Image 1 (cartoon, rainbow, N blue to C red):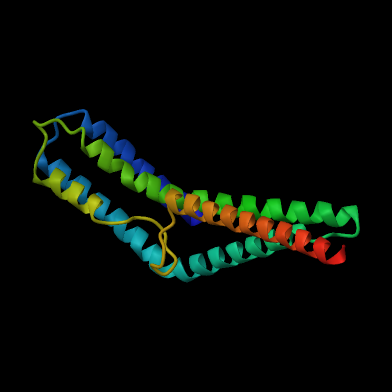
Image 2: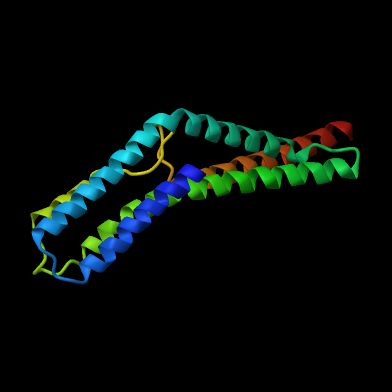
Length: 188
């Protein structure tokens, strides 16, 4: 989370600088400096991603595995009320922790794609090859932390995983009600 927040802060600094520049007519040599700064920021992100991608992959696999296990045990009858309290507390803590980590990591991608929107507002008097190169660099790369390049952490991935977990829960619920009605039919 700390690495995600640090990289996000760097992209935010770049975006604030770019917001100020977009409103003015800027010479080509300044756009060249902006593009170099952007490329250095991307290289830093790629270096960090290379170093921590195994940790990211294992962390997300671990979190999703335990969420699925907890969701699978949602229909288990528990003997004491304290067991229910612990179960629901641990499940909600696990989901909140995973969401918070996901949102911190996804904010890198959110901030990294913002310059593309800003660059589309560059006045025609300031438009040059450096601006075109910067736009080309942004449209052809996916920026963000990844799990060994298997997936990139974005908000879209978060929504897809949430939809999959909800579908998983609904299938379990349907399976549980089918088993209940089937077992009651046998007992009668």
